[in-house]
Image (cartoon, rainbow, N blue to C red; front, side):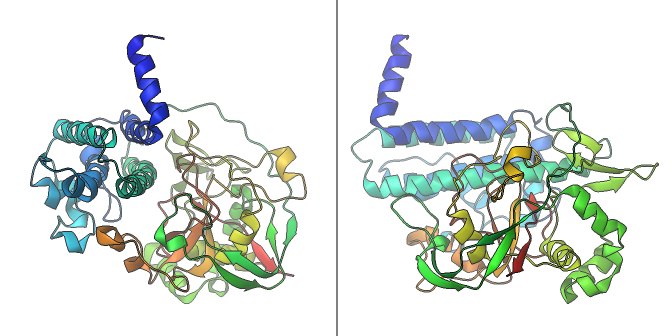
Length: 428
C-alpha cells in the first residue's frame, strides 16, 4: 500500500467520522456525475429541486450549522449563498423562493463544486482537530443523514425532470430485463397487543422517531410482499380510476382534476401496451415488479378495491422491527425489483425495506412527549406535522445504512414523484 494511502487508512480508522463524511459527500457527486450542467440547473415542478441546488444546499447545511458556529475564523465561501441555498429554516433568515430554484442559472455548477470543495476542506480540518467535540459529532451525523435524504431526492427529482422531456432521456443506460410472474400473495398474521414503537438505543435517529412509547395493536395481518404492477393493472382494467366508491373524497377530486388514469410515469403506446418511464429510460411495465409512484389516494383506493386496507405506521413498525434491516436499496438497478421466489414463497414478510416507500394509514403526528432538535435544527421535522401521511421502509433510491424500522418519512397524500408503493393489511 502506498504511504499516502496507508496514512489515509490509518486516519480513517482512528476517526471513522472522517471516512463517513468523505464517503457520503463523494456519493452525492457520483450521483450527479451522469448529468450535464444543463440537466443540473432545471426545476421541473415546485416540489422538486435542481441537482445543482441539492449539491449546494447540503453544503450550506455544513457551513451554516457547523462551520460558522464552531470553527473560529472560518471564512464563508460566498455570503450570498446563505440566502440562495437555505431551504426552510426561518430562524436563519430569508431565503430564495422554493418554486424559483430553477431560475438560479448563477452561480454556475463550477462555482457550486468549488463551494463543496471549500466547505469539505474546512470540515475535514475541523474533524481532524481537537475542536471535534461530541456536539460537533452529533451535528455531523445529522448533516450526513440530511445529505443522504437529498441523495434520494436528487434521483427522484431528476427522474421527474427527464420524464417531462419529449425525447425521454435516460439517467443511466438501459439494462436487459426479464419478465416473470408475481409470487403468490399470502397473509402473514402479526403479533398484536401492546407494543413499543419509536427509536431505541444510542444510534442516530431523527427527532420525529422519538420518544419510544407503547401502542395497542388489534389483531391484524400484512401481505407477505408489495403489490405488483400486474395486480395494480387489474385495478386499472376494472375501471378503478372511474369508480368513486373506492376513493376518499379528496382523492376522487384529485383524480378528476388531474385526469389520473394510472401511476405516474405509466402511459400506453399506440398498441395499448403499458410503458413506464424509469431512470434507465422508457420500457414496458413488468408485471412482477412492485408498483410505484402512486399517491396515498391511489394506494388507499387500490386497498379498498382489493378488500383490504393500508397498515398503520405502528402495525408496520411492529412487524418490521423483527426483520433484518436489509433489502433492495440504492444500487445500479434504480428501480424496484420483484420479490424473490424463495423469499416470497415462504410464510414470512419480505420487501419490508427498500424497493418502495410504503404508504400507511397514519397521519404524520408528533409522538407523545416529542421534542424537536435544539438550535436551528429544531425546524427539521416538527413544523411539518400537519396534512401529511407517513411512509415506511425506504426505497430503491434510499442509500444503504440510512433506513431503520423506526424511520418515518412523510409526504402530502397527493405526492407521486417519490418511489412510493403499497403493502396491504387486514383485520384478523
